[in-house]
Image (cartoon, rainbow, N blue to C red; front, side, top):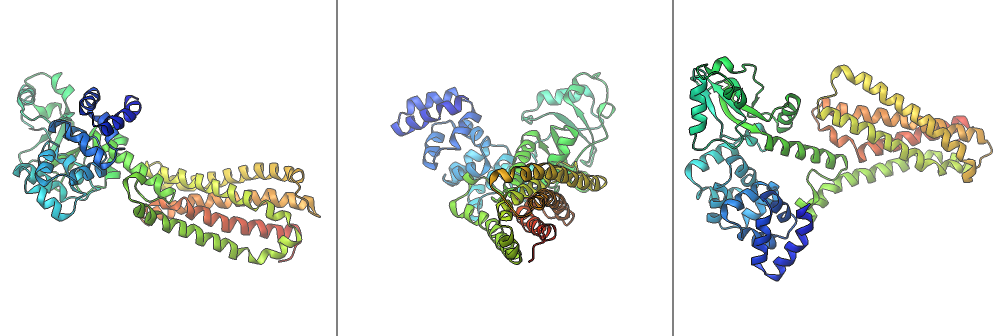
Length: 452
């Protein structure tokens, strides 16, 4: 990509102080590309580059950046300069940035923003950050149900500030309640004298202002929508969540789930300080450390078995490792299935049976392979057949346990309204290590006739 190739040139020109060459380089790239470069520069370099752009373009570049980084840039500006810049943004984009400021700094900036714009921003800030109300744009094109097609087209053509994402026209009654929706395509292909209510679709997919953003993205994905109207409890039209915000939510939620599953917090590392990353990871690693101690404690009763058959210790890592992998696979499938709405009540039993069957089948295959290879690896025992059976069925049993734990734990957490993404990573692997190794040694004690 051009941006990647020219990052070194950008930095070199910045350090050399050659503003003429830098401005020419900025002119060759669009706003999204410039935003991508700014996101990896230092704060000082970001400020210098931004000052070389006209204020209208600065706003477009800021709107294309991650809100955390854009907020850092705006926060370093004087309140008057920040207000001028934010006025060039759509209200919903400005709210994404201002929502990260403290009350005092927020008041200072809003006091210098145009009154009408400030009112829109304050209205959006009143909603939760992760709700449809916090995402929506107030810039919506509405028409009354008795408006004709010709009148609606003329209104669109004569609108001074038409929304940038005018995919739909929303039909409202005299009380402002949403009663229908029509597309621009249908509008321009209908007869001019037809009333809007004759071409509108009354079957409307909508959300309320307090709908969680993840649910909004799920609805948009399921119905293939590029915009979703937001209404209040009386179905009065409040705003619309557009495709750009929907895509951002999908990316944000997917990133959050991936990081939770790895026990690495909820935000990308480069958006947090060292201590924030430290605090995010420490609880999960503490859980893993405690889990490791519990594994050691739970295996204390099997010292005699290990002394009698030392070869059992050689295969502990592979049994625990294979079990952990299966548990992570099963839990990841379930977590993602829950997130996209694939897993429903009628499918839970079938899913659990399938994962357990997969664990048993794969465990028998790999257990047999490892038990056959064991003698060639120097693993010997007075009862080689017994050792082979312990490895084979121990592997199968551990993977069955892992599949059951990995599948059921996210479902249980989801049932109690706890984010199932936290069920993967250290939590599942630690549980599987304890239960799988206990089964492995229990099997050894009854198969190879060793005492504990």
